[in-house]
Image 1 (tube, helix red, strand yellow):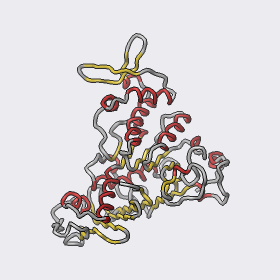
Image 2 (cartoon, rainbow, N blue to C red):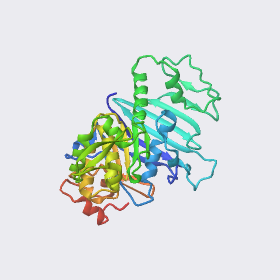
Image 3 (cartoon, helix red, strand yellow):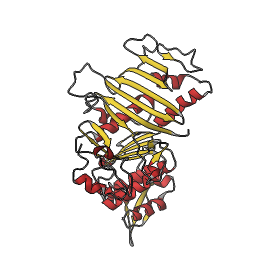
Amino acid sequence: MGLVMLIRFEVENFKNFNEKFVFDLSNVKNYEFNESCINNGLINKALIYGPNGSGKSNLGFAIFDIVSHITDNHDNKTFYRNFLNAENSLDTIAIFKYHIRINSNDIIYEYAKKTHEKLIYEKLFINKKLVISYNRESDRNATVLLAGAENLNTDLKETSLSIIKYVKSNTILDENAENETFLAFLDFINGMVYFKSLEGQWHSYIGQGITQNRVSEGILEEGLLDDFENFLNAAGVECKLTKLNRDGEDFIAFKYRNRKIEYSQAASTGTMSLGHFFYWLQKLKKNLVSFIYMDEFDAYYHHNLSKLIVNEIKQSSSQSILTTHNTSIMTNDLLRPDCYFILDNNKINPIFKFTDKELRKAHNIEKMYKAGTFNA
């Protein structure tokens, strides 16, 4: 698939985002440290700060709304209650716009919805050329200008299916650069994962289906028990793990001198959350995840453990966005000033945008943040 990354995301009239909200990942400075956090001039690793209620979770929900109509992956509809902004009238629509770089090509995909399930229009551009479009309220037929789709029935009045998903499912496209870009776009969306660590629940995610089974079952099935034990010990959870079989089912257990206790019964909330993270991390390391948004990723973690998690994320090639309230990890030892964002007052910007001072590696940016240097 090559290089595929989100450049810029825009959303309007969705949840708390009343007016157009822009999340720009191309605002890169020429810092000469932690260069691995940048890939091809785009931010590849980012941490988002902001007050409670500022919209950090809603930004993740907005970015991942696309999963519901383009893929068959897990879509947690409970996250999409109260879909439209409450300040606007009920007859308005929410608008979503994605700008994605695929190698040297650019995709812009824009669509509008009245609800999480009800599409109004879609427009897809490849290198500024409109290749797919359909407005259900005004067009009799969809427009599809991809080679190989010439004989496609484009009358979608009888179906609520996305035109993008319809083209994907009903055509064998010619082999050319434009179609390869389109298919890489679909692969990117299919590989996205939103993970809400705060709830500590295996089902609190959106995106590619990794497993519906218990975390422990997934770890055991992939032969990762020793790796999981090493990970927990590195995270400060001193333990020995073993396998426990009960009624024909295998479980992870803590191994003590005289007995075994099932992991889920003895683990603290933070340790349980680590288990969820560990399993997602394996997918990141295998490049099976294209884009991940981890909300409140360290809600149960000590600050040293939070640093360990960020360093683990940095080892993956996946574009990764994490939200947190933990200022102890706002340090140039981990990321850099163009990778730390503040979301407040329906705007989001990297911290260097909030000061005229030239930020250098030696600056204590946590201290500056607490002193109000980066007030929005």
